Amino acid sequence: TFSEMQISDLHWRLSERLSEFRFNHTLGVARAAVNLGRLYMPKHLIELQAAALLHDVTKELSVEQHIELMKRNRVEYTEADILAEPLLHSKTAEFMIREEFSEFATERICRAVRYHTTGHADMTLFDAIIYIADYIEDGRTNDFCVKLKEYFWSAEPSRMDIEDRITHLWKTVLYSLDMTIENITSRGGHVDKQTLFARDAVKDKLEADYTRYLIEGTFAHSYKHLKE
Image (cartoon, rainbow, N blue to C red; front, side, top):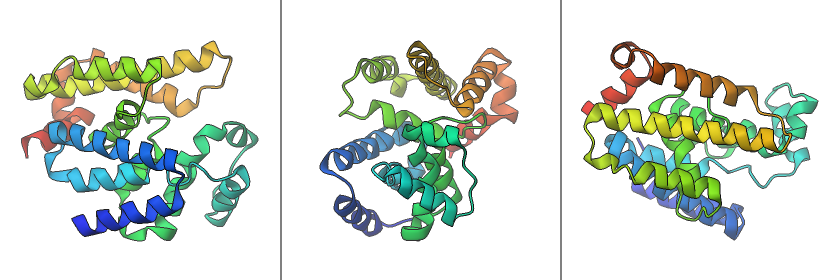
């Protein structure tokens, strides 16, 4: 695990690297991740903070800088990757973390950062918290994010029992993925395949035998962390 001193140092390093706007958003995501973490992973709040603080570490790089990072890490990229510029930072942030913030380069943090924009078919509870925190941080004011914040918090998840609370988080993930796909397609944009896979996987799990997934699947990890 990490110390509060390490998190404080990470704050300072990122404040020197990111624009004021991006840094304020980053702090908002960290606050949201902690609030969600208290409900779902109370023993992992510092690690959630670290992932949230690092999730946009390459957001303000140029396309050329993203390409250089991918080349340096021997990652193949396509023209489609370059055209989908808003997604590049989620593909390259992991490399920056490993190179310049290596003390935070755990598999859990790198994975959550990697999928915080697109989602993933096998999202873990940690992944889901960072994914949702990015949308519901208090600085977000667009209609999409306001709807998502209201959907999640108006249900008062802190009053729910464990199973219902877990289900509510994954329903929120599904709601977000559905809205993302709808917004992109309505503009004639290209939806990343990971987002489609994530939407289908979460939907299938919510519609299937929930008890079985508590025991065997992704939700089992959620349940384990809440019982710790």
